[in-house]
Length: 212
View 1 (cartoon, rainbow, N blue to C red):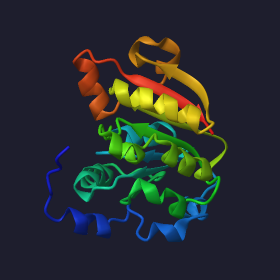
View 2: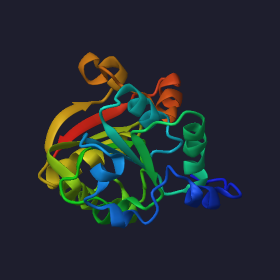
View 3: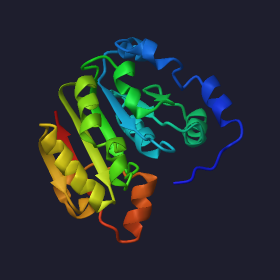
View 4: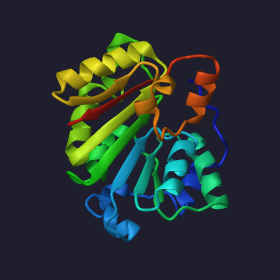
């Protein structure tokens, strides 16, 4: 996907009160940062923030951290936060590979992966956010009853993810190849911008829930 560079986005992200700078200093201190002992949920690749901001509004008793690598994308979420601030939501502009440096072992309870880059070439498989390498990272930061929830419209990536879950020794707690037609898996589902667009075209949405 080609990203349009937005002039001043980097500076705006660096100056925002909603974006944690030098986040590696917060490892083990996220509850102090939020000012409470509520559970911490993370979305990796949060895009413009619709999914996570909806969850944060619906669940004030949960703290949310959105990770987005690109400042030109994150700036859109910041604009929404400036218009309607949420006290239980903060952002990080980092690479997902650094997650173990940002969160202490067992500090988070849930990780959301929504419509991640499929990295279709075989040589890039390790970059996929559901690869075994990434699952090993998630296992470190997730608490004992933690879990990963993954949604995609890409069947090949979904199949790869199922294989990764098994290879990493995780437990598959939920799986569907047509989320919106699965009453149990779709209960309480919050759609992302991509999900709304893809499902409007008649594309099935795939989802899995995995436990480390």
